[in-house]
Every structure is written in C-alpha cells, then in structure tokens.
Image (tube, rainbow, N blue to C red; front, side, top):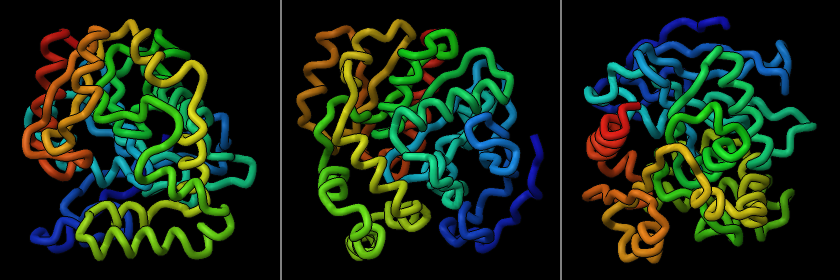
Length: 291
C-alpha cells in the first residue's frame, strides 16, 4: 500500500475550495493507494485511512457522492477520533473518478465485490459498515455475502427497495449516451442553482458510472435490500433525518426489530446538514453494542 503526499489546506474559511480538485481544503490527510484483484496493480484504488483502534468504520457513499467529501466532518468529529475510519470513494466517484475501466459495469453488485476486496487487501478481520442511500444497499449486500466481515451496520436512509427514488429514477430513464453528453451536466447545474452542496460531488462523479449506478438502483436485487436488512444478524441501526419525516419506514422498520434513530435538524443529506449529530448517533450505537 503506497501513500500519497499529505494535502495542504488552502483557505480555511472556505472548506469547499480544493487543493487537488477532490478533497476539501481544510483536510490535511493522506490518500492511500490500495491494490485489489479486480483492477490489478496498475489501477489502485485511493482511500482515506485515518488511524484509530477497534473495528474500523468503513464509509460508503450514495449516488453522485464521495465519502472523502461527504463524511469529512463526520469522520473527524471528536467522538469518532479514537476509532479507525476508512473513507472509500467507489470507482468512478470522488478521488476515484478516473477509475472507470471499460469492463467495469458500475453495478451495486460489482461495487460490493470491490469493497470486500478492499477490506481483505487492508488485512481487516471485521469492520463497521456505514452506508448512505446507495451505499447502504451496498453495505447490506456485503453483510449478506460476507457476514464474517461485518461487525455492525450504520445505515442512513439506505435504498431498501428496487424501482429507484427521486434522484435515481429520472437519471436511469435517460439514454446512457444522452445522459453522459448532456444529462450529467444538467444535474450539476440544477443542484448548484438550487443551493444543494450535492453538486460538488456530482461534478466529481463520472457520468457513465452515475448512470449505471442509477440503473442498478432502479433494477433492485432479489432478495431485496429490505429483506437483507430484516435478515441481518449483525447489530444494525437505521438513521433517518428529522426533515425526512413523516416516512413509512419510521413506523415499519421498528416492527421488524430494527433500531431507528432520528437525526435532528437534518434531511437525507444529514452528513452535510448536521454532521455532529450524525457522528454522535454513530458513537452511541457503537458504544451500546460495545463495538
């Protein structure tokens, strides 16, 4: 595993100004290069690996997102600093935007395989999976395929059912070549004009990857991500933003024994809306289960 030079902060008053066009400028952390069998030594995956103890928390992002940007404030929150934290940008996203080999289809199943290979390449016995939206679906698939690797699951409004959502469905409906040429830029512009910080990570997401991930979300899996959640044997918490309520799963999931916590003053993008409350919810869950 090779390590890249540390990034230096730019303007500390503007955390979204970047020094390398990928990471927020107020973070002086290093990128580690990890080789996985899927891509070989010529195409390593870049991650952020922050020192700590106990089972590492592996952060998996949503559609058009990037863990290295979305979870910067969460991962560096004081309550999590004693724990090892690994921030993964999936192939085609964030610091791995250019990792887009022609034989890689960017399905959620393939992403699940990549995450499993990364965990093995890092020599980790068991991890805590944090998965947001699409990343939550990937976390559930990994927990089902490799329960031996997963000590616990923290899920923030994960995709639980096929058919897509308000973001993935309109993207998936577009012709792939049309989305790549025009649609991706339109999504960036719409998010930017609406004041949504999501535009910054969409801009750093490969258009082809984003379209194929959206199609995979719409297609769903069998058994569904919801069924995988209900069958999960590891401790699991479902985090939902206060602004997302009312939501059917806030009532339905506890009926199936799923622990549910509401993150105050936050919506679907709770890592941006209230990162300290999200970090505290994660810490509380891990402490309760002695993870």
